[in-house]
Image (spheres, rainbow, N blue to C red):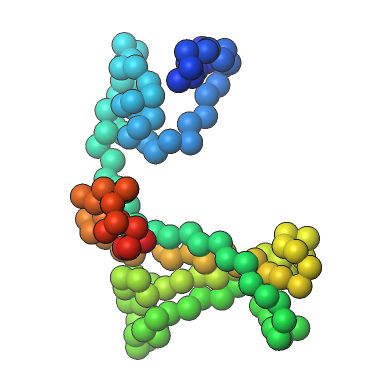
Length: 144
């Protein structure tokens, strides 16, 4: 690696490049096919990766008025409860959500009198339902 070439054609020289793109894009679109066996093998392995199920991150700001003073920062919410005593709820589709409220530790993360919550839905929704959708379509936006 000697650097990157930007869409503008400008080149930035460096010894290390970190990609924020997914593995498939990094291996097949951002890098040229490598003549070096070790890198070529890595590129081929990335093409064979199986996508994980879909997950969601949601950041929400809300009014702090009326919240209990002893509110915990972390919460796990199950739509269908714990489904008896087994761990099926952890893998059930769209069932488990994890909520964190970081402003309970650092009020400076939000305006005065407000809180910030991070809601994370674990990877329990099959990607197949999204794979063929045009991300600019009304159907995609409604599903989101």
